Image (cartoon, rainbow over all chains, first blue to last red):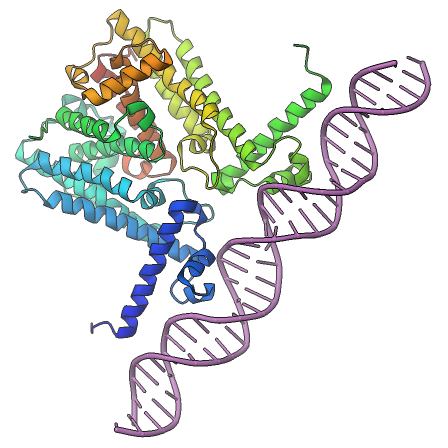
Length: 235
Length: 235
DNA sequence: TGTACATCAGTGAACGCGCGTTCACTGATGTAC
DNA sequence: TGTACATCAGTGAACGCGCGTTCACTGATGTAC
């Protein structure tokens, strides 16, 4: 593994610039309108120059999706690491607030990974699935640690989980080697889904007119969610 | 107000057929790919014939969106009416289950109203907003009645609603003449958002791999949600 | 009941545009000897 | 240190396609007298 050559560095920079402009254009035109010709025009190059960097349009889209999944997961991991390990409630709250903030700061990337699929494009699952599960894993890890420490006291109803679901989650934990109890995975998934709905609706402008202050509403909902789990943050 | 003429009936039928084919094509191509030429081709007509029925592409999209909002609201109202007025819990559960079922049965219409906006298209708010609020109103009406009867006992935390949000909702209720307490609107909105997240993620294939049986999971979550409000359905 | 006219559904060619991808090429930058 | 050659970035024209919307038209269906 030698150092990257000058050429390799320039090459990497062009690939990054291409993605940056693609993101910029999706912001105004929508995720489906991603066009190689438009990107090349903006870069002051011919379309064909782009084919040196990405095999075709689908390859560029895949790169954008992977970047988005990883950027989100990085942000969440950073938020999680900004508190001591045993401050479970604070860590979880920080992660959940970071989730919304990232989505609002990068609406296009969020739509790319969680919104309407792009017509005609098919994601290569072997690449996207691992990248996608990193975020959930961050949340579930905190929950599992909190459960182990006894600080997290899930309400009795969490144990009334229908057998179909409990079994499925147990299998999943086994297969992927998560090493967490089913309760942690369930709470993580259920919480993620609730939060996700709020963000999706806010992003598309459906909640603000009803709720008034989406940021305040989000914080209130997330805090309640955590309280109902037995995890109470100080602030 | 005379009867519709033969011509008017035929005209209506063609407009309906146009929308039906548009929906069919969005199902395979994505909501953004709605194309007048493709629709005309499928109908065995020239593109220009369509311009007799819809002023332009945007007008057709608006018609599809209004249809979707109204079909959803009709379905919810029907579900609500299938139980006696005082059976609040059963009515609410029926409405919430109907919401998911409608979304799964009409994924394209659901994406059209709650998914990514279509690039270049701008919805006329004076038409879409009233149609959109019908669904929420159905849920909120049940909650308000349940509150009045004393059968719904919201947890104390519902009254810890941040003033910004409570004030905004109070203004909204006043302005639109909902005639319900703030607690009913808040519970309705919060519940709607949670449910929405689950359905969105299921529709785009993000939850099934994690959850195993989305229908069972949905029922479990909705029931828990209602229990936490003090509304317990029999079945 | 018959006729003249208005209304309406639908045609067909054309405009100007954007798209992804192919192919054969030029000229600059690096590498081996 | 100089030269011959390979690698690589980028060009430019072309193919075949689809799109929304314009315009001037044809022929059938209804309506008024």
